[in-house]
Length: 91
Image (cartoon, rainbow, N blue to C red; front, side, top):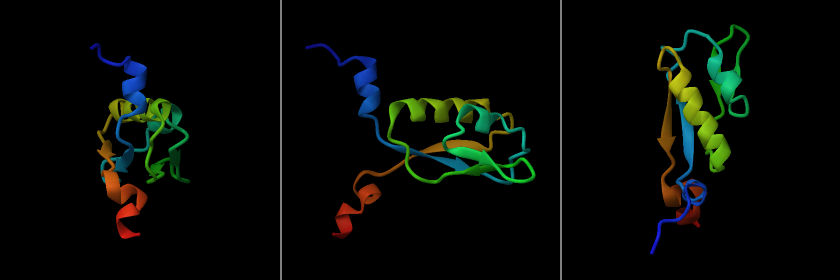
């Protein structure tokens, strides 16, 4: 039995969310250029992150690129835990 293609594995990967350490952000703005769907810039040019989970493979890929490109290491990815992300455990 062979492994599924990489694209299929990526689509089944756990959702992630982008985390920002605002004390490390220097306002370079590279992250917003790479992952503008989830990262914006405030009036002073510092990163503002959308905290919602990222489930789509292409958005996860862009988020990983933004994290890797940050010259100050202000961004990281956090895996969203399974049951609590949907709230199903509370219903």
